[in-house]
Image 1: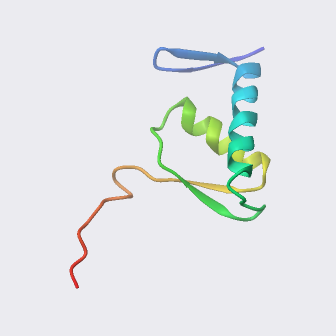
Image 2: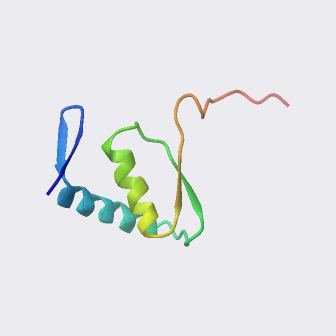
Length: 77
């Protein structure tokens, strides 16, 4: 059995799989369908990969939003 490490946090592959399945359950509750895309605004660490793998279990495409790809700008009309 392997391990996944990010910073101070370490998970076994079984723990990671369980957490990804829980993320899939949450994503499924958002009423998305296979082929849909969802935006994930998370740090680039284990939590992102749990959510991304959970989305993949459902056939949903995860898109990572970071501080560099998602900048809040005021809109003037």
